[in-house]
Length: 205
Image (cartoon, rainbow, N blue to C red; front, top):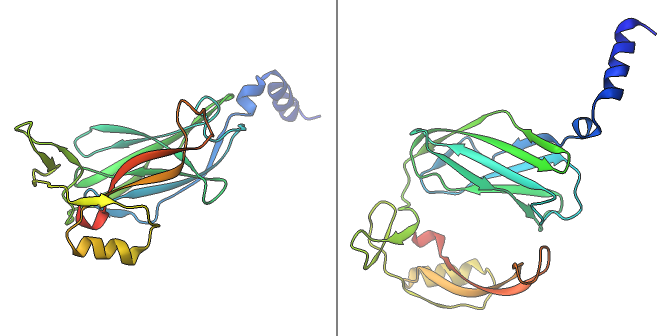
């Protein structure tokens, strides 16, 4: 055996198994390199890791760090996309225009691996941003200061876009409904329970 090959073989034997078996990130794909202010940016992450329950962060933790032009950082966890088995997504809504960067890390029981830095550009849009308590502490407003008045109803229908578009045309800007495939701390990771949530109609925000 040649000296170099012998040295590599000995090194592999001496290395801890956890180092050899650390997770690896295969690909991070974004649908576009440019997104509007307050719009949804979605990253699809494919990787190799050791886990049995994709819903348990103690077994598998996907974390993205987004850095704004102002150097402010946002840490956003990824999640298992059950509609496309084996797919993990990170969703983020940027709140500043300009050049952003991001890193994605994958952690399993053998260690943590981080991706190379990615970038995307945020441009102005017609969106006003998430809802928050107003400066006077009495009313609701959106991130850019636009007042927000909730007009909505209880909606148990499916995601029929025609119905939702008709509600939007009639002035509705939020609905309340049951979303079933959500887990809670009470039921345990990976177990489903009905959960009441409120969501905005995106076209009205």
